[in-house]
Length: 92
Image (cartoon, rainbow, N blue to C red; front, top):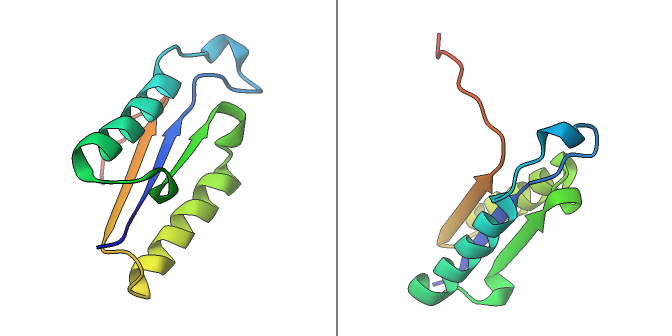
C-alpha cells in the first residue's frame, strides 16, 4: 500500500509582511507527525513545504506528481494539507 502526502504551511509572505501568521508551519509539521505516528507514513512518503518553499509552482508540481502517481497505480492513498490564509466565496 503506497501513499504520498503533501503538507503545506505558510506563515510569512514575501510581498505581504503585515499578513504574517504564527501557527501554519507548525500545522504542517504536526500533520507530518500525525501521518507518521498514526497512519504509517514514512519520511519519504511526505513532502513538507513551508514559507518560501511553498510557492505556487512547488505546490502544483507536487500535487501533479501525486495525482500522476495515483493514476499510474503507484499510490493508493494521497493526502494534501494546507494551512495558511484562506477565504470563502459563494458557489454560484
